[in-house]
Length: 89
Length: 343
Image 1 (cartoon, one colour):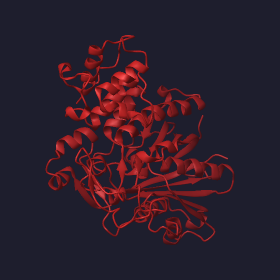
Image 2 (tube, chains in turn brown, red):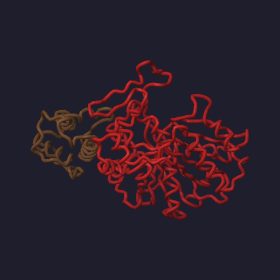
Image 3 (cartoon, helix red, strand yellow):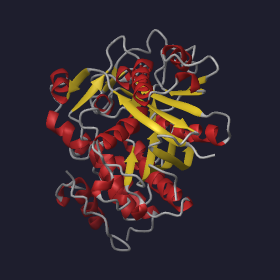
Image 4 (cartoon, chains in turn red, blue):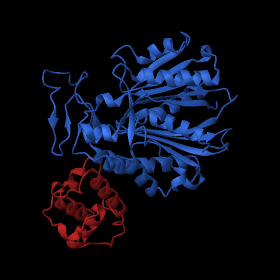
């Protein structure tokens, strides 16, 4: 199961820190992610992984609007959510 | 006028489908993993000829017998289902006769899922409060398993079948609870995320609509079967359930710490645990009882309330929040005080 400890984040994150944040939410090592990673590439990035990510993003104040969870399908999409929230360096 | 809860009852079909049964039909699934991720080990499933109204009937009949109610005193029957016996007439009309209720009894169906039981309590309270009715029977039942493809992990592992019933009355004699304020709401933008796309008027069945397709995760379903976008539904729950419950508490002048039990729709254990943590609710205040039933749609809350009664988890004066939310999207949250009148 994901660790669920990805919650508290600094005001802004570097791209590498976002990878770490996502890896924490999915319960996987951080070095397996890049900006090109897709959900389909990572077995743990399944339905439960999506929900863990949503919860952690919610707690971190990174908004994923209803109807917009397609952004969670890729690392690029998640970086976009951080960017839109003004939380990406 | 105050509306009292006279009793509540659930009913489950006999047939059991275990995770191992599902794995036998889907060898690449993992029984323990299904349990870890849903909190469900088995679910009850209606037989081929068993309908939602059958499940609702048994719950209501059991309830009326246990309360020794004069059936002639029931003046409204509300039946919630997404899986009616017929397109028409309303299953509530069939239940009126089957339950031996008087012909003076109003009876109608309403089509909601997981919010349906709490919605029914809201409506029953309004009927009593307006003095339109004195005794309202709220009956719920769903056979969602019949809508799920057995090879679709997003639905078939979650859903079971069940029924429930509650009697709401203007008469406080023998009441076990008092209905408090409610908040109900709707966001139809989420309709596409929990849907059976084909089979009714908008998209009638065609020669090809029953064809089974496989999605990119290997799940199989046709357009005549239940589709669920679990991630969107979870996002809805995070965005609307928590603030909605908080709004109810604020309206009642209460804090989460004032509530003795949070009786939430039993969607799946993962979602309930996340909602519980987000709301900082102690684990003992949010019972989870879907391990051997699955998500029974509108029936989860009456089944949960029955469980709480049987386990003596409810004491006179306890304040409970009932929370139903799901397909639609639709939601209903109500305050219930166990025993006497609310303070």
